[in-house]
Figure: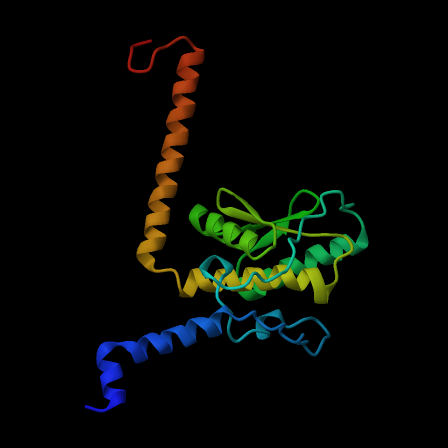
Length: 209
């Protein structure tokens, strides 16, 4: 038996290949060059062919420092409105998800399920873009002095990366498990509210009013 065949037999060659693959995925994602349409708008949906490993899976975070929302921004400021509109446009182009302005410093993105919104928000934080979720929406930050090539691109890149992994790499059974957990949490919250109302009315749970 040759050395090469022996290595395949004991799995060492496979392990080495897997280590090389993981090492490649763990490399920081190089900054994709900006691409533009004929009308001068950014072609967000034509900027990435692949993504590096998620920070939660061992890859490097997208940013070196956390990107925070500018909650003190003036929502009527033209530069803030421009940043908001560009993030909303970019989010739709890279994910197909609809977004809209929320409170100053935040943009709300609607997902099909609560579990998807929660997962993406948690992944975003680990990529050093501060995000949060509420129900079936996750919220991305926005700021009045943000540039297209800087912070705006950071937000859209992280949305592109996390939604790509959710759609193409999270197994269906894992999504089902998250959905079941989501349903149980909603049921527990409903029961807590119901029992809270009964206690406030002086009725003991399980007894007749």
